[in-house]
Length: 123
Image 1 (cartoon, rainbow, N blue to C red):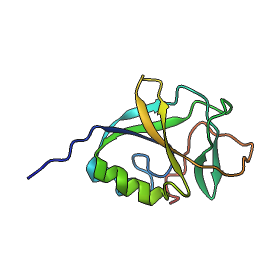
Image 2 (cartoon, rainbow, N blue to C red; image 1 turned 90 degrees about the horizontal axis):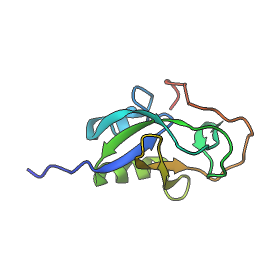
Image 3 (spheres, rainbow, N blue to C red; image 1 turned 60 degrees about the vertical axis):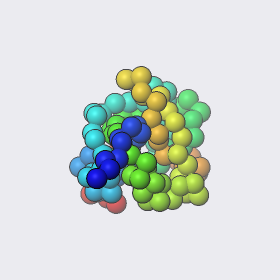
């Protein structure tokens, strides 16, 4: 049996976080490394569901859960997030020095920026 190598860092800020509504999408195939923040400021908004807007250095250092995943899990999450049409996967630096994938979305800026997403029940 071939074991998939979990060497892809993924930072999640919304419903994919540990214990949140869509955590099951990757929970069995990921390794939780902890909760960190983005090293740069991003705009986390809620537009029906959480979205991080493309980088412009405004907003907050966003709280994220960091996971190590394999390529198959990344592909599954890409589909779940509608990548590349709805969300775009981009690399961001975290405050622990790790460069991780994060999903961003080009959408209208609500001008209300959150530091972290807290609605564990909304999917």
